[in-house]
Length: 215
Ligand code: SAM
Image (cartoon, rainbow, N blue to C red; front, side):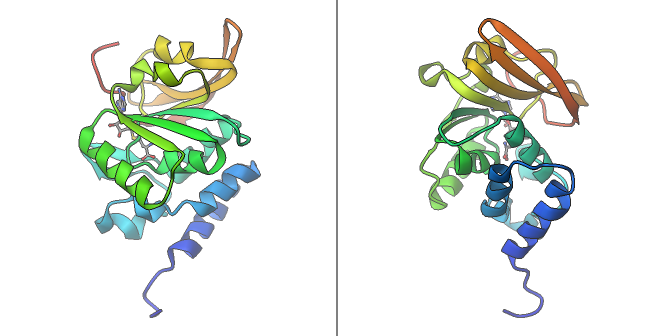
């Protein structure tokens, strides 16, 4: 290796220490997943130098791959132990789906924008993520045939409220993590207990809006 070539693995390990461990993410399964998934493979080729920066990056079609810390935080809030079935709304690059797939048994992921779905599905297949099932569609409706889900992650923001179909598809005891709001949103954690949904505000975030007809 010449001196000006950067090793993505060492950049990734440094990213996890500086941006994720340093900010308080402690779940060993999440840290291990973040150290394993090759983030640079999910970033457009001309932006690979920036793949481990502390920020979201454009992936085309006005969409983004989320900041590494936010991916880790949302994954930690999902409280995965290995047997879970997880739904992700907003496949984007496929990176968050791959992080989830390192821990959970099955990941179902829905994307609204066809070229993004195709590119993400190809990346996930190339990297052998066989427990991820990607699908084109409106994630606000969830994925009824595969419900209930132990965890649901929404990676685009509904302006006013979490879609009812998603809440309905959450298993008893399940966790749903979603940003809710306009330009700046509140990342919310919802835990289902029978017919009750307990909601906790986590932190302010900035996601792209959830697409589709008005809520
Ligand atoms: N999780 C992604 C990743 O790891 O790269 C980042 C997601 S990006 C912040 C949000 C994604 O949600 C975009 O790709 C966008 O096209 C998608 N999206 C927006 N509205 C959607 C909807 N109604 N159903 C499914 N996907 C949607």
